[in-house]
Length: 485
Image (cartoon, rainbow, N blue to C red; front, side, top):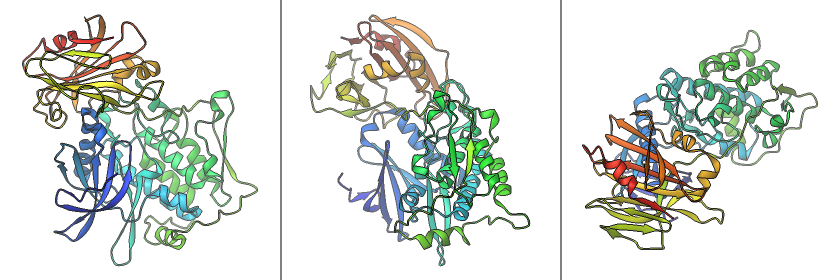
């Protein structure tokens, strides 16, 4: 990956990290003589409207909440190729994932850290927001002030949704091992108790005797109740807190992060001795003493505490990637007017529209080859970035048909800030389409999600459309022009 020299007014110094949907660079702000982290949407997702929405929603949400326990957003911008970027405060102390990889965190520091994370998530819950992806990689540290006081920050809210939009047709998303069981059910209500589950899993990762072998999807499905052993110096009452937080049924967990934090504080605090509420005095010193060198783990205790849970399955699944498009090196690069064909897909182009061949980002067939897709619009390469442009993404995927149903797939394609019309069906060009139309107050006024099954083989055909305004027949006409072989 070649580092850009500049992003907007910021000089780029080095790569900080690469994720599924974005790349993060360390930049320098010349006006303030300060470092910033610049998060850029990955190129292969730039054509996907939902991923762009998620990316920008995260920046807007962090900006709106503006709290010392959350990573801060300075501004957003757009690259010349149309990809959005967000300028964030630089977490110069790294992530919890990095620290766990380098050394075992002593129990007192681990308990204080878990309390700090609970307090940060409680900020989200007070504002009606569910994070849904609490992992060590999303817990960051920032050192500030002359004494290097360390703050614990909650980051990466790309999966977060307002509570009002997190029930019904909600996308399955999260990280296996930290994702609550109900997040694997597209029809389930995902609320603050899902984050409580994630906090419990973080606690187990911090405090277990042998964390690398803690398997959250372990043998429960086979009828065996797994045991998780905590280190000997973990207060016995903490095991009960983590057991309740990671209960399979949401009703059996703490209702939110604030309630869990209070229970953790009581369980961690010896009688008559208040627990430290900040990391400045104890947590930072404990981390600083470990440095960057790997330390030997403490000896395993002979009588660790155990977390016992009922024999219920916690299914670990891959994160369901949103749909995107990326350029292909094969086939015609551009077609204007008439029809356009890429692989088994052929479309009739509306008047004045062009098309470009792509592959469906994140979708691969049984042979490992990218599955086919295309983007069509009056300006296909600008469609995803410009909300004023109508356009459509068309993709064909056997892998998607094998893993989910039409209803399940469309449940992954909801738009949280929009109002959905009831699903309808229409038969066009031999395909029975299910169509869900959204009206939106921000950005594009209309987004239409539609999917059907290939009439001749096990494959799902997907069309996402942003139609021109005041064209009630446009969607069915466009679907009638989609042919698959």
